[in-house]
Every structure is written in C-alpha cells, then in structure tokens.
Amino acid sequence: MRAASIAVVFGTRPEIVKLAPVIWALGPVAKVIHSGQHYDPALSDVFLDELGLRAPDVSLAVGGMTRAAQIGTALLALDYTKSDSKRSPNKKKWIFS
Image (tube, rainbow, N blue to C red):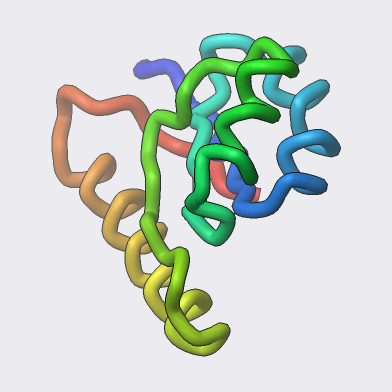
C-alpha cells in the first residue's frame, strides 16, 4: 500500500497563518497547494518564510483573474492534479478534505 498525502490548499495570507499549524503537524504527508490568489511575494512568500513553511508543492496560479475564473480554474487544476496522481502508479495517493 502506498502512503497517502493530505492536500492542504490555501491562497490568502490569513489562510497561510491559520493552516501553518496543520502543515507543521502533518509534516511530509502534507501536500501544500497554493492557489496563487495572492501571487505577489509580499503577500505570501514572506509569510511562508516567517512561519518556516516550505515552498508549496503545487501552485495553481489563479491570481489576477476574476473571482469566477479563479474558482473555476482552481477547481479544474485540483481535479486534474488529483486525477493525475491516481493514473500514475509512481505517485502517492492524495486525501482531499
């Protein structure tokens, strides 16, 4: 049985701060996914650095889009990322919550 990864998805500064303890607790099991909603380094990278979080494993790059486009693009990207990992026998399974 392959080990599972747990997807932790965030996109804003408050979400980074709130989810930092979850990422710390999960350790390497956490699959960190940044929506890219706050794509400016001053809006996200500085918080990742200050909280001692690693760079996201996946960036969905939805920043700068309309709200509807952000939601749609993020959902499609998450669906693709999740289904892609199921197709490849070399990738870990993900748990989305």
